[in-house]
Image (cartoon, rainbow, N blue to C red; front, side, top):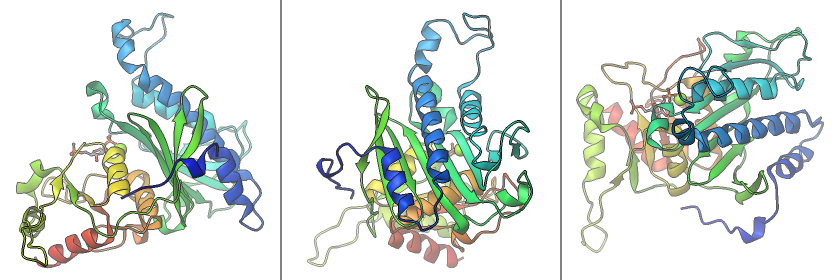
Length: 343
Ligand code: AHM
Ligand code: MG
């Protein structure tokens, strides 16, 4: 379980942290630091709107028009626009892709382009907004593989293993940004008074085995029998070495990937969104959800699998491709794979 000390990390901002990480990379230009700053700015703007989402209702702003007579955007549409507007002019990107847009998101012609590709789910778990449950933003960064001024879909359709960084922001009881450049994972908590993300979770490591499973069990009758046996196995207390009855796994399911993954990363255990009879490819999106979380999880010492293949090795063929996902503590993910092989 995560047990980092806040004392040793006091005062280190996200910006300084990324800058220091980048200085350690020979030949780094600082481009990446600039891109990250813009993502963090977008996160702060989205956070502030998420925090006042309920007030919008109280103030009567949820109708078609707001007080200025402008259309009120849905929160996920708002988040999408904020992210795109925050990064498109910076000159760091050649192309983007968003869960909210059908095709690639081009960098407008008036702006310079750069060597990175950004993909994101601007507001994951958005069906939970109305009931005040945690939601989040997930992002994935690749280096471009094409040449020319603008990037293309080919720049987006890269394996997760070639991500240069990934991260998420959780709008929870506090707002936390977690990122990795592939080697280690760090979390930063937004101090709302200062408007700055400060290092709060240095070098997160996921336990090799956990005590929590997280899956939408409402779908159990749509699963293969082997999957149900895996869940029953976790629900069955195993006797300890001295013969005393052990404790079964606990079940926790928020229904927001960011929230379920954040808990899994810090406490261990496993999150799954399996393929089922209704969603034969699973529900979650490879590029905006599974691949970035897989990079983070592996960098923290965990694993992420489709059930038969490492998520980071899956070669995408389309922007909105779905994939089954088993992610979390190494031993728990391996157990899921073992059960799935049985049928
Ligand atoms: P979204 O990106 O449209 O919000 O959907 C993805 C969400 C995930 O956050 C979550 O893990 C999953 O869908 C929950 O699905 P379900 O309601 O089927 O359990
Ligand atoms: Mg999502």
